[in-house]
Image (cartoon, rainbow, N blue to C red; front, side, top):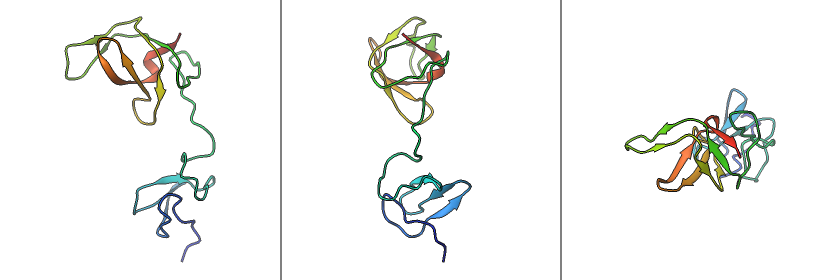
Length: 118
């Protein structure tokens, strides 16, 4: 049997390697092989993910950003105009890495490449 560590989330012994990642087939959790932190259940790697805006400034939760391009909202006729200020952003994992509320539109996700830190 292999000497791979158990899954830090569900403690399953059936983990397997997928490139540089370890994967649990029971709960779907993925984490890095080198930074396997047993029992922590936190991020997939030891180093925090740095999300940067369109000009390279690092973003943090609670920042205020400005939209740098007109953004059409899928399934709606609404548009987020250039220069719209978005306050109190939250950073998330995934394709749209900013979760926010925009006045007149509501809660939505933005990509960091279309915003600039204010």
